[in-house]
Image (cartoon, rainbow, N blue to C red; front, side, top):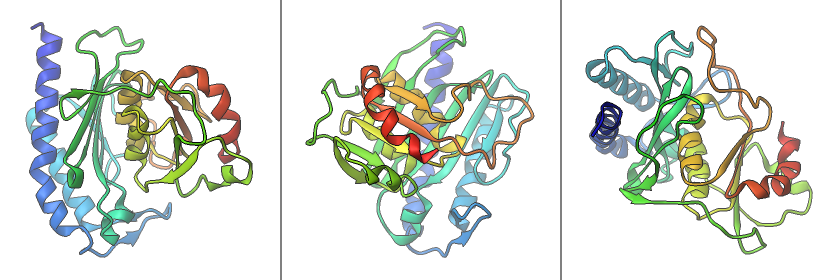
Length: 271
């Protein structure tokens, strides 16, 4: 095992250990905490802040030279080779209402580009992760996985019997005929991960932030899918010193690159 493989093995173990360590506490709090609204209208709870702090402390202890950008605290991308992007509870509305689908999302970036993504859905006991190196010059383990088993996007041609996932702010696409059945999950990461796992042929998010998509950007591509930024194609690498707290990143994920031409014109109305 070379140094990169060893490092990424440690990263995977860290993600598994850290997310499972906080999962039981979060499950106990789900549906039992009162949310407050942030400036962008999204919700936050004491559980979000606790999980955020716990994850940041764990990163600082295990990887003291790594930067961190999280939903609940620091939004400015740091000047460090490696940086974690953290969403302590993705799907806070579900979480506060007792809907048992929400996730913990961790993305690891090298020089501003995600190369490893990990998303844990505690109530389903599903751990998704993947490796994707793009143009970073790195090499190492490859593929996308759920609970250690390889996953891949569907090879099917989309039809009326296939699923396509929307978010609450992308329902405008239904003002026109749509070629698939629609589902709405309420969790940005899981919405798009269903494309990586082959359950859906596509998914769109109208206003995600970088912490919503950093991890799944890796996993979807590692699983054989295509991830499109509808507004800012050159999002990665992130820019040192830039504040990503208010930057929305409309995103489309599809099972195969050849179907971008089918779905992209249908969802561009959300931008």
